[in-house]
Length: 291
Image (cartoon, rainbow, N blue to C red; front, side, top):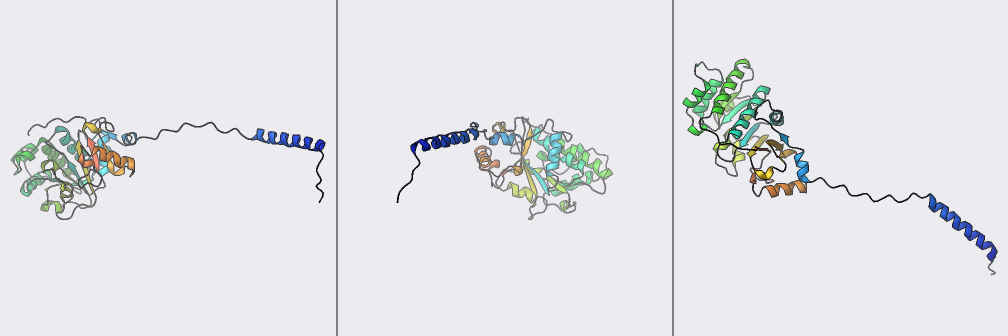
């Protein structure tokens, strides 16, 4: 077979034309994009700080306290972990949150770690029983342990007596742990338990608090508020405020952060029997004065 080839004089113009066409095609292609610097990933501390609700004043009118009341208003039971001797700020938080819940109509029961006969005296006063005594006198004379008598409790009785006088259709009752009064409270309204600062710290106190309303039947929707002034938390809560740990993403970074902090604050440990639901940090703690 005879191979037919184009003459050299013909091939050269063809090659030149092909090369020119190739160069023209390359010239129409867009230039590769400039490399973009990677965007720094948000650290877990930065993410947590954005979820903190600050509290300026421990009063029911403070926006941060109002937000906390809203966050817990749908629970069956809210209880506190004081973690040590009584402090003014811890007592003020209990009082402010309780008052905010009373004024919202969400609260139906205040549970105290007091003898049942003492709770009955307090409930009689709060319910409007005929008496000329002041709330402070009732608290001082009631059969309670001396460490359970406080100005905050007297102030709360005054508030409840006033509320119940004009809201007979949705009263707030006062009860001790596992007392008969608790069974008379509205089961569809929230209960709040003030007693944990008077109980010894142990791994079962969260379960004990959850069972405070109905003995042997722990609340299924229980919010556990832990109060602390731990300086190790100042990177996310620089001033007084709170963070709802239930809303945190279930990520490796958050879990690692909790495990690191739990070396000093064990109630932050994930899956721990007494791990906090809501963490409240007081910027300062002042020892309380006897009533």
